[in-house]
Image (cartoon, helix red, strand yellow):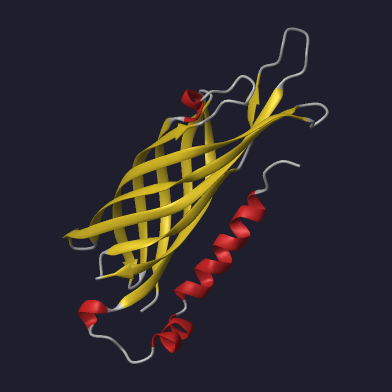
Length: 202
């Protein structure tokens, strides 16, 4: 069975809805803290583009987190390929398909720039899993886990109170890819571009 985007996104969406709702969060928080020390929730849905084995592919993902001090967020996120990557086979043989997903913990810090614009830096640190399968039989011919680090620079635009659209550029760096036929860590390393829609609870 290949890596399911639905399986990855199901948990991200559920967590995003729960954390973004101010009611449950406020009920658990007890007495309201001072504005300077208030902790709130935020979540985002993302569409990322990056090369894998020299082929451009889209990744669907998201993250959820808690905001501390008004401009620092810590949380977790995950991404999965929307379409598998086709790999060439041996001469006269069938090819292979590569599927992968990854996720981990992240930190993001932002500062207002001008008007509705906000600048942000962030990094995701975690792990991923990749599988290579025969295109005809769908038999797994290789699988491996790997470590991933992905720093990003972002520009956010406030659409409405509590809702922002963002664009990001980053670089995905992986290590530990050893058991994937026709794939190395350098094939997964790539510059990334991301569109995001973010919302937050008060």
